[in-house]
Length: 174
Image (tube, rainbow, N blue to C red; front, side, top):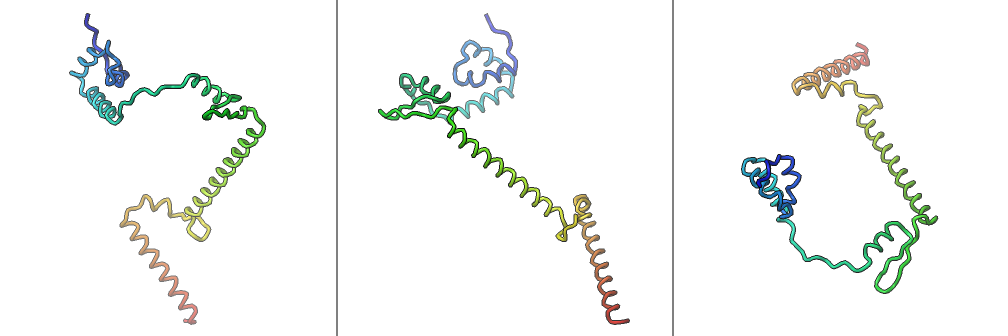
């Protein structure tokens, strides 16, 4: 009995199982879908290429009781075996450990606050015109074309030159 057509969504959910040979019961339907669907074919090709980056290894034997020791360490109050020596771990509720975590959290909060303050100061310095005031033209400059900026620069230069020569004329007593 042939399986009905499979959707793109189903194929994409099964891509890695299909590439690893773990979707044997759905493989014929997936192959039929891949014949007609270029986008799913591309996804499978990418998964195959990705799989090529990994080298298969032999299974690693896990020592007896390993899972129990890991669970004990994760939930505190357990012992870890280092060679033939038992090393006790402090329980999660230990006052010294809790105090150390508290100091680390306090330091992280303080460091974050200092970094935020420094960022605000730098932002304000960048927004000012160098004399402590906000550059009113800064927002307009982003919308101005290069030609408009050059014309504005020439106009300001002419104004400053005219103001400088009138101040010089006043100083000479003319």
